Image (cartoon, rainbow, N blue to C red):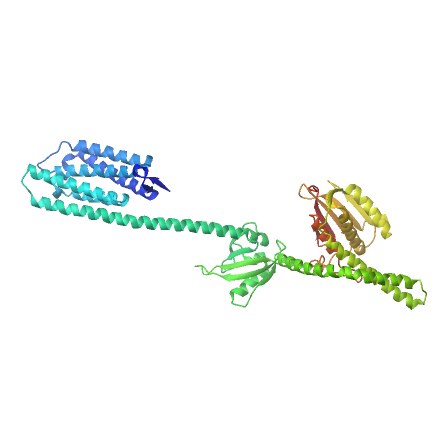
Amino acid sequence: MSKPGAGGNEPFSDTHWISLRYFSLYRLAVAGLLFVTALVHPSAFPVLSPYQSWRYLPLLASLYLLSALVAVLLAYRYRRHANWQLTASVVVDVLVVTLLIHAGGGLGSGLGSMLLVTLAGAGLVGQGRLVLLYAAVATIAVLFEQTLRALQNDLDLVGFFNAGVFSCAFFAVAVSARLLARRVIANEALARQRGVDLRNQTLISQRVIEAMQDGVLVLRRDGRIRQSNPRARQLLGLSGVNEVQVADCSPQLGEGFVAWSRGENVNAVLARIAGSGFELRVHFVATATSEADVLAFLEDMSDLREQARQLKLASLGRLTASIAHEIRNPLSAISHAGELMREERRGEMHDRLLRIILDNAQRLDRIVNDVLELGRRDRTYRELIDLGQTLPLFVAEYLAKENMPPEVLRLELSGTAKLCFDRSHFHQVMWNLLGNALRHSRRLAASVRLVVKNGLQEDHIELHVIDDGEGVDEACREQIFEPFFTTRHRGTGLGLYIARELCDANGAQLELQGIGPGADFRLLGRAVGCQ
């Protein structure tokens, strides 16, 4: 930030203003000492000879102190016309010191060094050719004082020689101080700019690290977490607390870090975090910091699996969509021929083989229909479904078609009981979930429970399909929604996969909850926003 200088045209930086204030404070200190000496014990003033006393000394010291005080107030309160303020201060100093030199008997009194200090300070603060002006003013004042002394007394050549030496010293000190000030200001400006660049780079780096989808940890050599970004704290289940051992988050992660620290060839560590439930892949990278910290990059394996699944499904979708239509025509011919052959009675073996053909033809037809249904998942017509009216009718229809007693399935409705969903998609999802639950249940009273309640968020609703079967094996939980994965001999492996895909198309989530006996499939959807 810069301010206008003399005339409001020349820039005057904050550094110059600080220097001007220090220079003004120095002048105030000198003026104060001169005033106290002149007022309390004027005979002790060293410039006066034992045979001479100057009665105007208290007045001069008072005026000098007043001018110095005004200069300090201006430097702190009035940040304009800095060069004029500096010039006035230098002129006053030259005038006062010249009068003291004259009263003290010339340059031999030693007061000429005060002008050197003044010019040095002005050289550090001043700008451009003004520094040479200050040296010229001091030179003219000293030569004028020496000429006046020569006119009043006898000509003193030694005095003129001393005046010439001081004049050269004035210019040398002023120019040297100016060159030194320019270098200092340039270095300070460079340091300030580098500080700004470093701060900007730090802010950008910090923002990038905070927004990264991967977690980043800074580990000490003993395994303590020194720093972490928000994503890393989420993956590790930390509540913003650093200086914890990485082994406390996951024993696998701690063992991997120890193995990497020993120099073992550890490319990546797979670790499951108990606190958050994430499965991570961790890479360790050494740094060249003074404390030899280690960077750990945490990658969520579920994201990688989801990417791989999407790639697999995309290729699978292209393949199945291209052959599904080609399969339906010969499949229809096989089914039709089988129905015609059923009318012929050629013995028990013939009937058994024919039944195998027709059953498998029906199974292939279901698979083709399911695959074609996936191609229409994006064509949704969502509406607000009143579950209090829809579910009782749907349950009654399903139980009647499957020839199941009504007491096997219990419906529990509470809360809003309204769901934003495509109606045909909703019927297919519920048909798949109820069919899966009934197959794995014990088929006793209330073996399957259909629970509807409000979600944790105000505009969400939860629909649970719960059975009392053996539940889903831990090894199968991550594959249960994958296409063509089934534990049933005659299953297609597409029911749960299609159900979840249809939920995704309607902005809902389908997930398997709990690890206890039985299975609990939760459909989490919205009760608003169907436009």
